[in-house]
Image 1 (cartoon, rainbow, N blue to C red):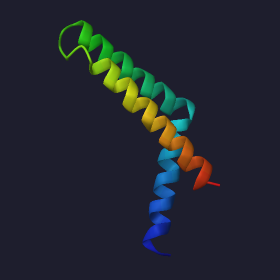
Image 2 (cartoon, rainbow, N blue to C red; image 1 turned 180 degrees about the vertical axis):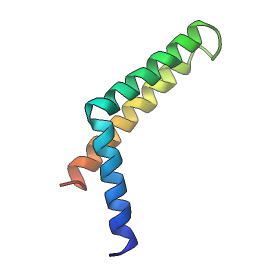
Image 3 (cartoon, helix red, strand yellow; image 1 turned 90 degrees about the vertical axis):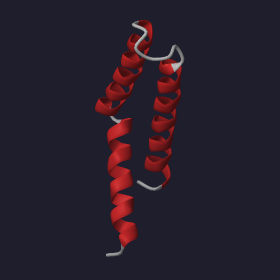
Length: 71
């Protein structure tokens, strides 16, 4: 069992979590928190949009990992 097997299993496990219902809820919660922090002037106004971009990127990456590596 090489190092690639461990990395592959770790990536597919993380991707499965992010694409599942708990991962989607986690991404949505992070985006909502970023927008609320921006509304309370605790973060820059662009923080919510940055969080939304990275949440979408994480979901897309996890989807591709599940599709191409996980199968």
